[in-house]
Amino acid sequence: PLAGTRVLVTAGGTHEPIDPVRYLGNSSSGRQGVAIARAAAASGARVTLVAANIDDSLVRGAGAGTEVVPVSTAAQMRDAVTARLEGADALVMAAAVADFRPKRALASKIKKDTDGDGAPVIELVRNPDILAEAARSPHRPRVVVGFAAETGTDEEVAAFGRAKARRKGADLMAVNRVGEGEGFGDVPNRIDVLDAGGRGVGTASGTKDDVAEYLVGLIASRLATLSA
Image (cartoon, rainbow, N blue to C red):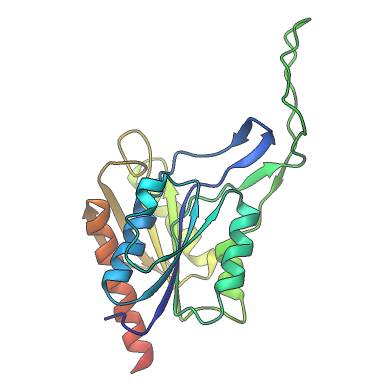
């Protein structure tokens, strides 16, 4: 279904340096994004995977012929995505991108204050919103998919997802709950897919591959409709 198309996928979690040995990060393993890249490649697409801090053994499972672009920070991911938007038919932003980064990364390791119990103050600044920028870009792919990893009750997760779907400008938003035993890592996943207006499109649950195949099917259907 995706033969002749180009699909750009982001996966993993960004690391924002504090000093040479510490960073702000998150628990994303990149498994879901890699599974999406694999499913898109199996469906015939030419796939580029922008991989943030993903274990090499996982990246190797992204599918034969997949171009892999390793990055670490949100700024690097933004540059990689922006440079590859033109000509892409679909963008899937499955990566967990840090919302904030330290305003200044220190050149040397922060030392513990041995004369007291004072702690360093780390000033944060907001990272670029890669998904929103891509959705507004003149090189916007025909289908843009975002992910919203949320915590809270079912009602709270649904409300956060609807708000994000309306705000970001993506065609589809995959909303998933994350926490202990849910979402991140080698555990089953569930996504509720919303359209740009926050209305429900469908739900998928199961292995990361099950969820990926469902999402790739939605993308293929949307592209086919746009090409009709």
